[in-house]
Length: 289
Image 1: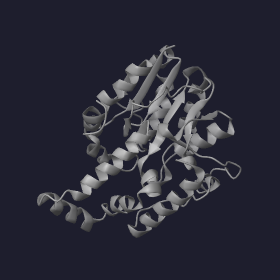
Image 2 (image 1 turned 120 degrees about the vertical axis):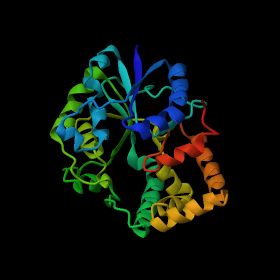
Image 3 (image 1 turned 90 degrees about the vertical axis):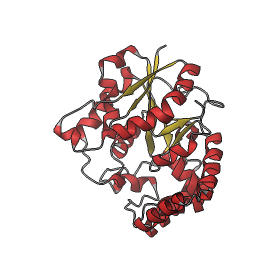
Image 4 (image 1 turned 30 degrees about the vertical axis):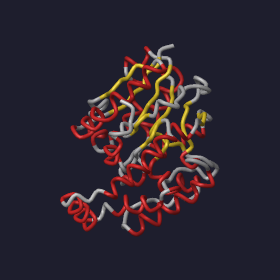
């Protein structure tokens, strides 16, 4: 069986971050479990439509590439992920070939804890005037995006997924070609449409949340003070204060945050820095290279 682990890095800053932190780290996982690493650094679609929406949509085109036919299974991983190989296992284990293996976004790490963490995130975003869409219940996630998902009780997290060129090329292309974006980041790009179509067509096999161990959600659940600090850094005043701290050598906050991130990394397999990618550089001393 041939397997590939695929990502997309478009732009100088994303390329630098991937090469600085991820490439060697990911290669350890690929070598351990027999994957070929494919890093796409140019757009798969250069049309005017594609340029008007996030590059995140283009993950739906990986199965449309000629090279995809050479693989039985393909694993997509967003480029803001660090891998902990030490206690890892193969992500495709237990995922039938005709299913898309993916994490339940509302189950990170459990349904009960996620309900607490999402409310904490909303409170933090309210304080920082950060735009978001209020989706306490999974059905709200769809309805607030004008998708008829009132009978759906889960939402996928599309930052990591297992797929098959034979079984999933058609539905990925369908979502890419038939849904639009046109709204802010808070609407989550391709995620709502892909989640809706995969779930209603019974194409999902849920996998361990450790394969999409989202930092923001875990901080909100177990380190809420760090979440508030992370969100507050988006304000102008906080950015000025943080710059002054760095200038005078005050790094106690970074020390504590490193400890927090190391604790989370030890629990994860694929640690996803969605919404906080700059914090990946705090992991340089801990990640496997």
